[in-house]
Image (cartoon, rainbow, N blue to C red; front, side, top):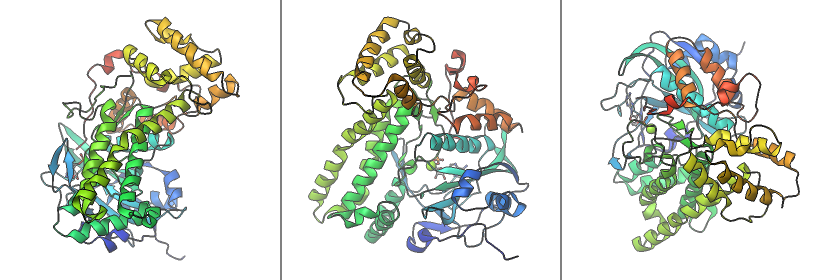
Length: 492
Ligand code: AMP
Ligand code: MG
Protein backbone atom coordinates (compact mmCIF):
# COMPACT_ATOMS: atom_id res chain seq x y z
CA UNK A 1 0.00 0.00 0.00
CA UNK A 2 1.35 3.43 -0.86
CA UNK A 3 1.73 5.83 2.00
CA UNK A 4 -0.54 8.85 1.75
CA UNK A 5 -0.05 11.77 4.15
CA UNK A 6 -3.15 12.88 6.07
CA UNK A 7 -2.91 16.47 4.81
CA UNK A 8 -1.19 18.03 1.83
CA UNK A 9 0.46 21.17 3.16
CA UNK A 10 1.65 24.28 1.39
CA UNK A 11 2.89 26.70 4.05
CA UNK A 12 2.89 30.16 2.52
CA UNK A 13 2.77 32.10 5.82
CA UNK A 14 6.04 30.58 7.01
CA UNK A 15 7.59 30.93 3.58
CA UNK A 16 6.66 34.58 3.03
CA UNK A 17 6.31 36.24 6.43
CA UNK A 18 9.58 35.74 8.27
CA UNK A 19 9.52 37.89 11.40
CA UNK A 20 5.86 37.25 12.15
CA UNK A 21 6.20 33.86 13.85
CA UNK A 22 8.38 31.58 15.95
CA UNK A 23 8.87 27.94 14.98
CA UNK A 24 7.60 25.85 17.88
CA UNK A 25 6.43 22.32 18.66
CA UNK A 26 3.27 21.24 20.50
CA UNK A 27 3.55 19.84 24.01
CA UNK A 28 2.81 16.12 24.38
CA UNK A 29 -0.58 15.02 25.71
CA UNK A 30 -0.36 12.17 28.24
CA UNK A 31 -3.56 10.26 27.35
CA UNK A 32 -5.36 11.47 24.22
CA UNK A 33 -9.07 10.65 23.99
CA UNK A 34 -11.07 12.01 21.05
CA UNK A 35 -14.30 13.80 21.95
CA UNK A 36 -15.70 14.94 18.61
CA UNK A 37 -14.73 14.81 14.94
CA UNK A 38 -16.09 17.00 12.17
CA UNK A 39 -16.59 14.66 9.20
CA UNK A 40 -18.25 17.37 7.15
CA UNK A 41 -15.20 19.63 7.47
CA UNK A 42 -12.82 16.70 6.94
CA UNK A 43 -14.55 16.12 3.60
CA UNK A 44 -14.00 19.77 2.64
CA UNK A 45 -10.31 19.28 3.36
CA UNK A 46 -10.24 16.02 1.38
CA UNK A 47 -9.17 14.20 4.56
CA UNK A 48 -10.25 10.62 5.11
CA UNK A 49 -12.41 10.66 8.30
CA UNK A 50 -11.29 7.13 9.18
CA UNK A 51 -7.64 8.14 9.00
CA UNK A 52 -8.42 11.08 11.28
CA UNK A 53 -9.99 8.70 13.83
CA UNK A 54 -7.08 6.25 13.73
CA UNK A 55 -4.51 6.57 16.56
CA UNK A 56 -2.04 8.28 14.17
CA UNK A 57 -4.73 10.84 13.24
CA UNK A 58 -5.66 11.50 16.87
CA UNK A 59 -1.98 11.96 17.75
CA UNK A 60 -1.75 14.68 15.12
CA UNK A 61 -4.97 16.38 16.26
CA UNK A 62 -3.77 16.53 19.87
CA UNK A 63 -0.20 17.58 19.09
CA UNK A 64 1.55 14.28 19.94
CA UNK A 65 2.81 13.86 16.39
CA UNK A 66 3.50 16.32 13.61
CA UNK A 67 1.84 15.65 10.29
CA UNK A 68 4.15 15.20 7.32
CA UNK A 69 4.68 18.53 5.56
CA UNK A 70 3.66 20.72 8.51
CA UNK A 71 5.85 23.55 9.79
CA UNK A 72 4.42 24.44 13.19
CA UNK A 73 4.78 28.05 14.33
CA UNK A 74 3.40 30.33 17.00
CA UNK A 75 2.10 33.40 15.16
CA UNK A 76 3.00 36.84 16.45
CA UNK A 77 0.40 39.55 16.95
CA UNK A 78 -0.41 42.56 19.08
CA UNK A 79 -3.83 43.76 20.10
CA UNK A 80 -6.00 46.38 21.72
CA UNK A 81 -7.67 44.51 24.58
CA UNK A 82 -10.67 46.44 25.93
CA UNK A 83 -9.12 49.56 24.42
CA UNK A 84 -5.61 49.19 25.88
CA UNK A 85 -2.72 48.25 23.61
CA UNK A 86 -0.70 45.07 24.27
CA UNK A 87 2.30 45.11 21.93
CA UNK A 88 3.09 41.41 22.29
CA UNK A 89 0.28 38.88 22.43
CA UNK A 90 0.68 36.14 19.83
CA UNK A 91 -0.24 32.47 20.04
CA UNK A 92 0.38 31.79 23.72
CA UNK A 93 -1.23 28.37 23.65
CA UNK A 94 -1.77 27.71 19.97
CA UNK A 95 0.19 26.79 16.85
CA UNK A 96 -0.32 27.07 13.14
CA UNK A 97 0.53 23.62 11.77
CA UNK A 98 0.35 24.69 8.16
CA UNK A 99 -1.99 25.41 5.25
CA UNK A 100 -4.08 22.95 3.29
CA UNK A 101 -5.83 23.53 -0.03
CA UNK A 102 -9.44 22.40 0.31
CA UNK A 103 -11.49 20.61 -2.35
CA UNK A 104 -12.50 23.96 -3.86
CA UNK A 105 -8.90 25.11 -4.00
CA UNK A 106 -9.22 27.52 -1.06
CA UNK A 107 -6.24 27.81 1.25
CA UNK A 108 -7.18 26.92 4.86
CA UNK A 109 -5.06 27.15 8.01
CA UNK A 110 -4.85 24.10 10.25
CA UNK A 111 -4.19 25.27 13.79
CA UNK A 112 -4.07 23.70 17.26
CA UNK A 113 -5.39 25.51 20.33
CA UNK A 114 -4.46 24.30 23.82
CA UNK A 115 -1.24 22.68 22.59
CA UNK A 116 1.12 24.00 25.27
CA UNK A 117 3.12 27.07 26.16
CA UNK A 118 4.93 29.02 23.44
CA UNK A 119 7.33 31.99 23.47
CA UNK A 120 4.18 34.18 23.58
CA UNK A 121 2.64 32.45 26.61
CA UNK A 122 3.57 35.18 29.11
CA UNK A 123 2.07 33.98 32.42
CA UNK A 124 -0.29 31.46 30.82
CA UNK A 125 -0.10 27.68 31.14
CA UNK A 126 -0.61 27.05 27.42
CA UNK A 127 -3.57 24.78 28.10
CA UNK A 128 -7.25 24.74 27.30
CA UNK A 129 -10.09 22.92 29.07
CA UNK A 130 -12.62 20.52 27.57
CA UNK A 131 -15.61 22.81 28.19
CA UNK A 132 -14.35 25.93 26.35
CA UNK A 133 -12.96 23.88 23.45
CA UNK A 134 -16.29 22.07 22.97
CA UNK A 135 -17.98 25.44 23.24
CA UNK A 136 -15.84 26.75 20.38
CA UNK A 137 -16.67 23.63 18.33
CA UNK A 138 -20.41 24.00 18.94
CA UNK A 139 -20.59 27.75 18.37
CA UNK A 140 -18.54 27.59 15.19
CA UNK A 141 -20.74 24.85 13.73
CA UNK A 142 -23.89 26.75 14.71
CA UNK A 143 -22.60 29.92 13.05
CA UNK A 144 -21.53 28.02 9.95
CA UNK A 145 -24.99 26.45 9.68
CA UNK A 146 -26.50 29.93 9.97
CA UNK A 147 -24.45 30.95 6.94
CA UNK A 148 -22.14 33.25 8.92
CA UNK A 149 -18.42 33.26 8.00
CA UNK A 150 -16.48 31.54 10.76
CA UNK A 151 -13.47 29.48 11.69
CA UNK A 152 -14.49 25.87 12.36
CA UNK A 153 -13.22 23.02 14.46
CA UNK A 154 -12.04 19.80 12.86
CA UNK A 155 -11.90 17.94 16.18
CA UNK A 156 -11.59 18.23 19.93
CA UNK A 157 -9.34 15.72 21.67
CA UNK A 158 -9.06 15.45 25.45
CA UNK A 159 -5.42 15.44 26.50
CA UNK A 160 -5.65 13.43 29.72
CA UNK A 161 -3.97 16.42 31.35
CA UNK A 162 -5.35 18.48 34.25
CA UNK A 163 -5.93 22.20 33.77
CA UNK A 164 -6.03 24.41 36.81
CA UNK A 165 -8.64 27.21 36.62
CA UNK A 166 -11.08 28.07 39.45
CA UNK A 167 -11.26 24.29 39.77
CA UNK A 168 -9.27 21.44 38.25
CA UNK A 169 -10.61 20.70 34.77
CA UNK A 170 -9.86 18.12 32.08
CA UNK A 171 -7.65 19.48 29.31
CA UNK A 172 -8.30 19.39 25.56
CA UNK A 173 -6.86 20.50 22.24
CA UNK A 174 -9.03 21.99 19.51
CA UNK A 175 -7.96 21.60 15.89
CA UNK A 176 -9.16 24.75 14.14
CA UNK A 177 -9.56 25.48 10.45
CA UNK A 178 -9.62 29.08 9.23
CA UNK A 179 -9.42 30.97 5.95
CA UNK A 180 -6.34 32.40 7.68
CA UNK A 181 -5.32 33.60 11.11
CA UNK A 182 -4.39 37.08 9.89
CA UNK A 183 -5.79 39.55 12.38
CA UNK A 184 -5.87 43.31 12.77
CA UNK A 185 -3.43 42.53 15.59
CA UNK A 186 -1.05 40.89 13.10
CA UNK A 187 -0.83 44.23 11.26
CA UNK A 188 -0.40 46.08 14.54
CA UNK A 189 2.52 43.81 15.42
CA UNK A 190 4.10 44.22 11.98
CA UNK A 191 3.73 48.01 12.18
CA UNK A 192 5.51 48.09 15.54
CA UNK A 193 8.63 46.22 14.39
CA UNK A 194 10.49 49.24 13.00
CA UNK A 195 10.78 47.69 9.53
CA UNK A 196 8.66 49.64 7.04
CA UNK A 197 8.75 46.82 4.50
CA UNK A 198 7.12 44.34 6.89
CA UNK A 199 3.60 45.84 6.79
CA UNK A 200 3.83 46.05 3.02
CA UNK A 201 4.81 42.39 2.77
CA UNK A 202 1.99 41.44 5.12
CA UNK A 203 -0.53 43.54 3.18
CA UNK A 204 0.62 42.04 -0.13
CA UNK A 205 0.23 38.59 1.39
CA UNK A 206 -3.27 39.35 2.73
CA UNK A 207 -4.33 40.84 -0.61
CA UNK A 208 -3.15 37.81 -2.55
CA UNK A 209 -4.76 35.41 -0.11
CA UNK A 210 -8.10 37.11 0.56
CA UNK A 211 -8.79 40.03 -1.77
CA UNK A 212 -6.80 39.41 -4.98
CA UNK A 213 -9.06 41.72 -7.01
CA UNK A 214 -7.84 44.72 -5.00
CA UNK A 215 -4.32 44.27 -6.41
CA UNK A 216 -5.64 45.62 -9.72
CA UNK A 217 -7.12 48.78 -8.20
CA UNK A 218 -5.66 52.25 -8.68
CA UNK A 219 -4.77 52.36 -4.98
CA UNK A 220 -4.51 48.66 -4.03
CA UNK A 221 -3.89 49.16 -0.30
CA UNK A 222 -6.78 51.57 0.14
CA UNK A 223 -9.08 49.26 -1.83
CA UNK A 224 -7.88 46.38 0.33
CA UNK A 225 -8.72 48.37 3.45
CA UNK A 226 -12.17 49.09 2.05
CA UNK A 227 -12.70 45.39 1.29
CA UNK A 228 -11.82 44.44 4.88
CA UNK A 229 -14.08 47.23 6.13
CA UNK A 230 -16.96 45.84 4.11
CA UNK A 231 -16.28 42.24 5.20
CA UNK A 232 -16.42 43.33 8.84
CA UNK A 233 -19.54 45.45 8.25
CA UNK A 234 -21.24 42.43 6.71
CA UNK A 235 -20.02 40.05 9.42
CA UNK A 236 -21.14 42.18 12.35
CA UNK A 237 -24.52 42.78 10.67
CA UNK A 238 -24.96 39.01 10.46
CA UNK A 239 -24.11 38.64 14.14
CA UNK A 240 -26.64 41.30 15.07
CA UNK A 241 -29.30 39.73 12.84
CA UNK A 242 -29.11 36.41 14.74
CA UNK A 243 -28.66 37.93 18.21
CA UNK A 244 -25.01 36.87 18.56
CA UNK A 245 -22.71 38.65 20.99
CA UNK A 246 -19.02 37.97 20.37
CA UNK A 247 -18.04 39.23 23.79
CA UNK A 248 -14.36 40.01 23.24
CA UNK A 249 -13.94 42.11 20.09
CA UNK A 250 -10.30 42.97 20.78
CA UNK A 251 -8.25 43.79 17.68
CA UNK A 252 -6.43 40.45 17.96
CA UNK A 253 -9.81 38.75 17.55
CA UNK A 254 -10.72 40.59 14.33
CA UNK A 255 -9.82 38.66 11.19
CA UNK A 256 -8.75 40.18 7.89
CA UNK A 257 -10.72 37.46 6.07
CA UNK A 258 -14.01 38.50 7.70
CA UNK A 259 -14.49 35.22 9.57
CA UNK A 260 -15.72 35.09 13.16
CA UNK A 261 -12.83 33.95 15.37
CA UNK A 262 -12.19 33.09 19.04
CA UNK A 263 -15.35 31.81 20.64
CA UNK A 264 -14.58 32.72 24.23
CA UNK A 265 -17.31 34.42 26.21
CA UNK A 266 -19.67 34.63 23.22
CA UNK A 267 -23.37 33.87 23.53
CA UNK A 268 -26.71 34.25 21.80
CA UNK A 269 -29.17 36.67 23.32
CA UNK A 270 -32.58 35.35 24.36
CA UNK A 271 -34.69 38.36 25.43
CA UNK A 272 -34.01 41.29 23.12
CA UNK A 273 -32.00 44.03 24.80
CA UNK A 274 -29.34 46.06 22.99
CA UNK A 275 -27.44 46.46 26.26
CA UNK A 276 -26.98 42.70 26.74
CA UNK A 277 -23.53 41.70 28.01
CA UNK A 278 -22.71 38.16 29.12
CA UNK A 279 -18.93 38.28 29.53
CA UNK A 280 -17.77 38.33 33.14
CA UNK A 281 -14.84 40.59 32.25
CA UNK A 282 -16.78 43.17 30.19
CA UNK A 283 -17.65 45.44 33.10
CA UNK A 284 -18.26 48.58 31.05
CA UNK A 285 -20.38 46.89 28.39
CA UNK A 286 -17.81 47.80 25.73
CA UNK A 287 -18.74 44.69 23.74
CA UNK A 288 -22.51 44.72 24.45
CA UNK A 289 -24.83 43.43 21.71
CA UNK A 290 -25.78 46.88 20.43
CA UNK A 291 -22.25 48.24 20.68
CA UNK A 292 -20.75 45.77 18.22
CA UNK A 293 -21.06 47.93 15.07
CA UNK A 294 -19.29 51.02 16.52
CA UNK A 295 -16.64 48.77 18.09
CA UNK A 296 -16.01 47.14 14.71
CA UNK A 297 -15.48 50.62 13.27
CA UNK A 298 -13.09 51.48 16.12
CA UNK A 299 -11.12 48.29 15.43
CA UNK A 300 -10.95 49.18 11.73
CA UNK A 301 -9.51 52.57 12.66
CA UNK A 302 -6.68 50.75 14.46
CA UNK A 303 -6.22 48.65 11.30
CA UNK A 304 -6.09 51.79 9.12
CA UNK A 305 -3.38 53.27 11.33
CA UNK A 306 -1.07 50.39 10.44
CA UNK A 307 -1.67 50.90 6.70
CA UNK A 308 -1.35 54.71 6.54
CA UNK A 309 2.18 54.72 5.01
CA UNK A 310 0.86 52.54 2.18
CA UNK A 311 -2.12 54.71 1.24
CA UNK A 312 -0.13 57.72 0.05
CA UNK A 313 3.33 59.24 0.32
CA UNK A 314 1.84 62.36 1.87
CA UNK A 315 0.73 61.65 5.47
CA UNK A 316 -2.14 64.16 5.36
CA UNK A 317 -3.50 62.62 2.18
CA UNK A 318 -3.23 59.15 3.75
CA UNK A 319 -5.25 60.20 6.76
CA UNK A 320 -7.87 61.85 4.55
CA UNK A 321 -8.23 58.73 2.38
CA UNK A 322 -8.44 56.40 5.38
CA UNK A 323 -10.99 58.64 7.07
CA UNK A 324 -13.22 58.65 4.00
CA UNK A 325 -13.32 54.85 3.97
CA UNK A 326 -13.84 54.60 7.72
CA UNK A 327 -16.66 57.11 7.68
CA UNK A 328 -18.48 54.91 5.17
CA UNK A 329 -18.66 52.11 7.75
CA UNK A 330 -22.00 53.06 9.41
CA UNK A 331 -23.79 53.21 6.04
CA UNK A 332 -22.20 49.97 4.87
CA UNK A 333 -23.17 48.25 8.09
CA UNK A 334 -26.69 49.64 7.95
CA UNK A 335 -27.12 48.49 4.35
CA UNK A 336 -26.19 44.92 5.28
CA UNK A 337 -28.36 44.96 8.38
CA UNK A 338 -31.45 46.41 6.66
CA UNK A 339 -31.18 43.87 3.84
CA UNK A 340 -31.00 41.12 6.46
CA UNK A 341 -33.95 42.48 8.46
CA UNK A 342 -36.05 42.73 5.31
CA UNK A 343 -35.30 39.08 4.59
CA UNK A 344 -36.21 38.13 8.18
CA UNK A 345 -39.53 39.93 7.74
CA UNK A 346 -40.26 38.32 4.39
CA UNK A 347 -39.83 41.63 2.59
CA UNK A 348 -36.75 40.84 0.55
CA UNK A 349 -38.57 41.11 -2.76
CA UNK A 350 -40.59 44.26 -2.20
CA UNK A 351 -39.53 47.87 -2.62
CA UNK A 352 -39.07 49.63 0.72
CA UNK A 353 -42.32 51.43 1.50
CA UNK A 354 -42.87 52.03 5.21
CA UNK A 355 -39.47 53.52 6.10
CA UNK A 356 -39.89 53.19 9.87
CA UNK A 357 -41.22 49.63 9.91
CA UNK A 358 -37.96 47.98 10.97
CA UNK A 359 -36.86 50.58 13.51
CA UNK A 360 -40.31 50.57 15.09
CA UNK A 361 -40.16 46.79 15.45
CA UNK A 362 -36.75 46.97 17.11
CA UNK A 363 -38.11 49.55 19.56
CA UNK A 364 -41.05 47.25 20.39
CA UNK A 365 -38.78 44.21 20.89
CA UNK A 366 -36.56 46.28 23.15
CA UNK A 367 -39.45 47.69 25.19
CA UNK A 368 -40.95 44.23 25.76
CA UNK A 369 -37.72 42.18 25.97
CA UNK A 370 -39.24 39.60 23.61
CA UNK A 371 -37.32 36.38 22.89
CA UNK A 372 -35.53 37.46 19.71
CA UNK A 373 -35.23 34.08 17.98
CA UNK A 374 -38.76 32.80 18.65
CA UNK A 375 -40.30 36.08 17.59
CA UNK A 376 -39.44 35.78 13.89
CA UNK A 377 -40.61 32.16 13.72
CA UNK A 378 -43.86 33.16 15.45
CA UNK A 379 -44.29 35.95 12.91
CA UNK A 380 -44.03 33.47 10.02
CA UNK A 381 -46.45 31.12 11.81
CA UNK A 382 -48.93 33.98 12.11
CA UNK A 383 -48.99 34.26 8.32
CA UNK A 384 -50.08 30.62 8.14
CA UNK A 385 -52.73 31.23 10.77
CA UNK A 386 -50.85 28.91 13.13
CA UNK A 387 -49.74 29.34 16.73
CA UNK A 388 -50.92 31.80 19.34
CA UNK A 389 -51.94 35.28 18.16
CA UNK A 390 -48.72 37.21 17.64
CA UNK A 391 -49.85 39.98 19.99
CA UNK A 392 -49.84 37.49 22.87
CA UNK A 393 -46.02 37.60 22.96
CA UNK A 394 -46.34 41.18 24.20
CA UNK A 395 -47.69 42.58 27.46
CA UNK A 396 -49.53 45.21 25.42
CA UNK A 397 -50.79 43.16 22.44
CA UNK A 398 -52.27 46.24 20.74
CA UNK A 399 -48.79 47.73 20.21
CA UNK A 400 -47.62 44.75 18.19
CA UNK A 401 -50.95 44.30 16.43
CA UNK A 402 -50.75 47.87 15.12
CA UNK A 403 -47.21 47.19 13.89
CA UNK A 404 -48.28 43.85 12.34
CA UNK A 405 -51.03 45.66 10.40
CA UNK A 406 -48.38 47.87 8.78
CA UNK A 407 -46.18 44.85 8.09
CA UNK A 408 -49.05 42.96 6.44
CA UNK A 409 -49.80 45.99 4.26
CA UNK A 410 -46.17 45.95 3.14
CA UNK A 411 -46.36 42.21 2.36
CA UNK A 412 -49.47 42.80 0.27
CA UNK A 413 -47.38 44.80 -2.20
CA UNK A 414 -45.43 41.61 -3.07
CA UNK A 415 -46.54 39.20 -5.76
CA UNK A 416 -45.97 35.99 -3.76
CA UNK A 417 -48.61 34.58 -1.43
CA UNK A 418 -48.40 34.46 2.35
CA UNK A 419 -47.48 30.77 2.50
CA UNK A 420 -44.50 31.42 0.23
CA UNK A 421 -43.49 34.41 2.31
CA UNK A 422 -43.70 32.38 5.54
CA UNK A 423 -41.53 29.66 3.99
CA UNK A 424 -38.96 32.26 2.86
CA UNK A 425 -38.86 33.70 6.38
CA UNK A 426 -38.30 30.25 7.87
CA UNK A 427 -35.29 29.82 5.60
CA UNK A 428 -33.51 32.78 7.21
CA UNK A 429 -34.90 32.79 10.79
CA UNK A 430 -33.42 29.95 12.86
CA UNK A 431 -35.63 27.88 15.12
CA UNK A 432 -32.60 26.36 16.92
CA UNK A 433 -29.71 28.42 18.24
CA UNK A 434 -27.23 27.36 20.95
CA UNK A 435 -29.24 28.72 23.83
CA UNK A 436 -27.12 29.51 26.84
CA UNK A 437 -28.85 27.21 29.33
CA UNK A 438 -28.52 24.28 26.91
CA UNK A 439 -24.87 25.07 26.15
CA UNK A 440 -24.04 25.17 29.85
CA UNK A 441 -25.90 21.92 30.49
CA UNK A 442 -24.12 20.20 27.58
CA UNK A 443 -20.65 21.42 28.58
CA UNK A 444 -21.10 20.55 32.24
CA UNK A 445 -22.13 17.01 31.28
CA UNK A 446 -19.22 16.72 28.80
CA UNK A 447 -16.73 17.86 31.44
CA UNK A 448 -18.06 15.02 33.61
CA UNK A 449 -17.63 12.55 30.75
CA UNK A 450 -21.16 12.45 29.26
CA UNK A 451 -21.13 13.73 25.67
CA UNK A 452 -24.76 12.86 24.82
CA UNK A 453 -26.28 16.27 25.62
CA UNK A 454 -23.50 17.93 23.56
CA UNK A 455 -24.20 15.75 20.53
CA UNK A 456 -27.96 16.26 20.80
CA UNK A 457 -27.54 20.03 20.95
CA UNK A 458 -25.04 19.95 18.09
CA UNK A 459 -27.52 17.96 15.95
CA UNK A 460 -30.18 20.60 16.58
CA UNK A 461 -28.07 23.66 15.79
CA UNK A 462 -26.39 22.33 12.64
CA UNK A 463 -29.83 22.29 10.97
CA UNK A 464 -31.09 25.53 12.46
CA UNK A 465 -33.93 26.33 10.06
CA UNK A 466 -35.47 22.88 9.90
CA UNK A 467 -38.07 22.45 12.66
CA UNK A 468 -38.20 18.83 13.80
CA UNK A 469 -40.60 17.02 16.15
CA UNK A 470 -39.02 16.01 19.43
CA UNK A 471 -36.66 19.00 19.54
CA UNK A 472 -39.05 21.42 21.24
CA UNK A 473 -36.77 21.97 24.24
CA UNK A 474 -34.07 23.27 21.87
CA UNK A 475 -36.45 25.95 20.58
CA UNK A 476 -37.60 27.11 24.00
CA UNK A 477 -36.13 30.13 25.81
CA UNK A 478 -34.34 29.58 29.09
CA UNK A 479 -36.33 29.80 32.31
CA UNK A 480 -36.18 33.38 33.62
CA UNK A 481 -34.26 32.26 36.70
CA UNK A 482 -31.40 31.09 34.47
CA UNK A 483 -31.14 34.37 32.56
CA UNK A 484 -30.83 36.62 35.60
CA UNK A 485 -27.15 37.25 36.06
CA UNK A 486 -26.01 34.68 33.47
CA UNK A 487 -22.30 35.16 32.78
CA UNK A 488 -19.82 33.66 30.35
CA UNK A 489 -16.10 33.33 30.82
CA UNK A 490 -13.14 33.64 28.51
CA UNK A 491 -12.11 30.04 29.00
CA UNK A 492 -8.48 30.88 29.50
P1 AMP B 1 -7.88 35.21 23.85
O1 AMP B 1 -8.58 35.86 25.00
O2 AMP B 1 -8.14 33.72 23.75
O3 AMP B 1 -8.13 35.92 22.55
O4 AMP B 1 -6.33 35.31 24.17
C1 AMP B 1 -5.64 36.51 24.34
C2 AMP B 1 -4.16 36.24 24.43
O5 AMP B 1 -3.87 35.47 25.60
C3 AMP B 1 -3.58 35.47 23.28
O6 AMP B 1 -2.27 35.97 23.08
C4 AMP B 1 -3.56 34.06 23.79
O7 AMP B 1 -2.60 33.25 23.13
C5 AMP B 1 -3.19 34.26 25.25
N1 AMP B 1 -3.66 33.18 26.11
C6 AMP B 1 -4.93 32.92 26.49
N2 AMP B 1 -4.98 31.86 27.31
C7 AMP B 1 -3.72 31.40 27.45
C8 AMP B 1 -3.10 30.32 28.20
N3 AMP B 1 -3.83 29.49 28.94
N4 AMP B 1 -1.78 30.18 28.08
C9 AMP B 1 -1.04 31.01 27.34
N5 AMP B 1 -1.54 32.04 26.64
C10 AMP B 1 -2.87 32.25 26.69
MG1 MG C 1 -7.72 35.68 20.68
